[in-house]
Length: 261
Image 1 (cartoon, rainbow, N blue to C red):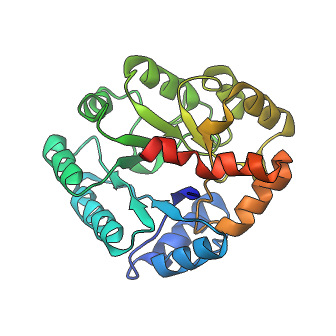
Image 2: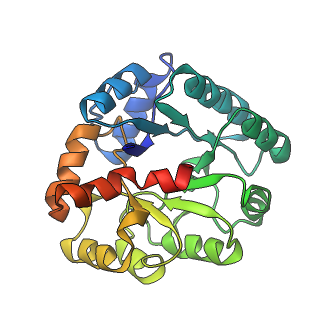
């Protein structure tokens, strides 16, 4: 099966507002509408079998509504694998984790930068203690601030991986948006998956080559970051940038099988 491991789809009531926020934060005009119908149509056109759809609660009060949305998405179409969310300020994480497990949710997305917590916060470590070995963690990593000032970074993720050896983790954006020199030093070659979303257009060629040399190909998963980018165009860019044969490209499209099954 072929997967896009990093997508987003929003409720119709908020989709336009979210697209506007994404545009203002990243300076990128989204390609898609942010609606699940548009995502699935683009995924079908790109030859993808399944999409992982992410959400992130920006405050504790959003945890339940966001997870209700994820559960409803996953139940709506067999092509959708929805990840849930959690916030370090939420008062009963274990109860919500149990609910997500009952509803077949396999992973959670954490976006420390948007959720306003640092990855080395002791409260977040408490969440990870409950979480380890039960769910896959998708981490947004990196931004324009240097690692010590940014809520997420490859260095903080490396410490998490050392402290939680049973944690199955995906580091989005080739390990860390704008933090790729630290990805080479701290994450490449370690026991973590990475995805290709929102990374290749911005990466220095030498750093990209270093990461590809050090990190196992089967642990670099295709992700488009829809609605920012179109899955089909992102697949073409991945093949072109990395000069992949069709069989090499297939590794990046299909290796999420090992993660999810």
